[in-house]
Image: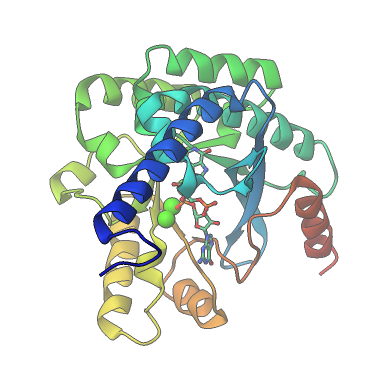
Length: 281
Ligand code: C2E
Ligand code: CA
Ligand code: CA
Ligand code: CA
């Protein structure tokens, strides 16, 4: 079966070749991206569910690619973990997020916000000197360590526990708080959970999506929320898209929520505007 003079194998080979080239291109472009000033941040509010107030925000990275436009992290973070550029990207995100948050805290509209959440990849966290870098960025930006919530993955906390747990402990001793991101999608065992060096659980969106139509899913989320309360951890539910999600989660005692119902991730100007509309509400 021939199409356009090429058989299936040839077309397959061409596509593989193109994909490889694209990846190679991405790799080298990504290595230049931070120095080239191509990284951007978006900010998504995190809501205190009982009061409806903005408790804080999560900083989310974007890449303004010179040819392809604005790319989301799903299109480059994995690759940057492979090449190691995630260390530089993550360092930029941390500094930029704290600089922006420290500034907002001095404005009337932002003075009541309690924290900024920053994602830290496993490779970035394990890079020697990470804790010192956090200390240095806090000092440079004049940010209070208690403003910073670092979001790490379940697997980071579970694997090579020794050095990682020491570093988590050192950060917490400084006043920085630690969240387990996408909680429930990994392999946390109950025995680990009871003495993990963390402060916050973020329940992954995949658990929230279906709670209104699936009683089992609802019960599962309720279990996570009450487990967190037993362990004296705060809980953030992600992916709140419907008012029904919000009320169900508030009713079961979930303290914080994040999702499109409140706001998508937005630019710093849009975020300030959002804060103003909240203040006058
Ligand atoms: P995440 O940490 O779980 O971040 C939440 C993601 O869910 C964000 O996607 C956000 O836009 C999206 N989201 C929030 N609320 C809703 C909702 O109501 N509905 C839907 N459909 N989506 C919602 P985003 O910004 O594309 O980020 C994707 C992932 O990339 C993040 O997932 C995080 O794991 C990673 N990431 C983002 N920024 C960074 C960073 O600075 N460093 C590292 N290492 N990873 C990052
Ligand atoms: Ca996150
Ligand atoms: Ca998450
Ligand atoms: Ca997630």
